[in-house]
Image 1: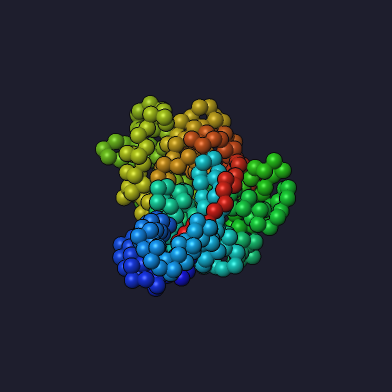
Image 2: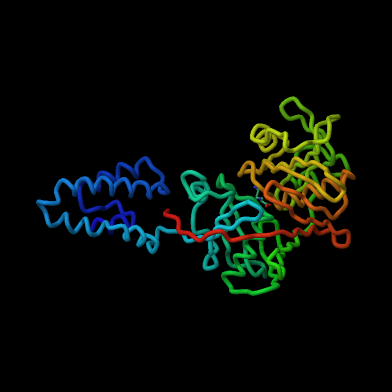
Amino acid sequence: MEIAAINTVSVAPQSRLLSNTFSRKLGSVSSLSLRSIEREYRVGSARLRASAASSSSMDAVTAEKTSPSSFLENRESKKVLHFVKYHGLGNDFILVDNRDSSEPKITQEQVAKLCDRNFGVGADGVIFAMPGVNGADYTMRIFNSDGSEPEMCGNGVRCFARFIAELENLQGKHSFTMHTGAGLIVPEIQDDGQVMVDMGIPILKAQDVPTKLPGTKGEAVVQAELVVDGVTWNVTCVSMGNPHCITFGTKGGPNLKVDDLNLPEIGPKFEHHEMFPARTNTEFVEVLSRSHLKMRVWERGAGATLACGTGACALVVAAVLEGRANRKCTVDLPGGPLEIEWRQEDNHIYMTGPAEAVFYGSALL
Ligand SMILES: N[C@@H](CCC[C@H](N)C(=O)O)C(=O)O
């Protein structure tokens, strides 16, 4: 009987002790912590059984039902989220098969808890694979590790494509259409497993990025001055559906050496700067050559990550607009390189890189 209460995470247990334990704990502890509550409860009940075992057959039944295998039975309960963890160059996501519903299976609060690297699974975000809308094959919704919902995610799209290929058992080269907050996106899985993504046309108009910085090249914000904590940086603002602020260094200062940056200190000051009404992702870029750039990123809603696909696309646009690089570049991110091309013919940006599944799991909610 007791184990039924554990399996369903019910707060209607059979014994007064269990009832008190659960209601006390549930009052103050998040639902994601139930795993530890359960463990704690078992320890508690085991102690109780140990002292009463010789005098009651009821206790013997209890002991049998709290055997280790009972924990695994939880995986079949309704309060479990099955997922696959993917990463694109270390930018990691929990992917959820949500093809049967247009409502995400978990709340934004649960997303933030799942993404916690100590108290949850740990990830930069959660991605839901949903039914397509507006004629698209699928819809991707993504949530950052802080629970906020961005419009787009480049590494996430590549992970999404590989996830769909697994779910639908697609082999070899395949392409499909995805509806995202940034419009229609078209990933194509290559024969070697890499994913090339048509990321669409970059948005440069200041108010659409959005930024309150005034346009410096028509309506585009290119090499504009932004004062952050008393220091003037030169920035270019680009939206890939989500906002990016790209900098190659401070006004009159030397070219950036990105390894020297104190990212956790400077990153949040850009993210929450008053010039960015929707907050911003920020890319700090070092030019290695006209076709080779190196970056570190501070992501809106996720902090320092090992890679940012939309950021890599945005910074190539910025580098071209500032006359620093060619349209086709390798971008080195902390987690590895991406190939980016901003094609003149169609004005679209193409990103090519890897995505890998690393484990399957079930999270207790
Ligand atoms: N890492 C992603 C971008 C994820 C969204 C971003 N944090 C935002 O809030 O815009 C990428 O690979 O593009």
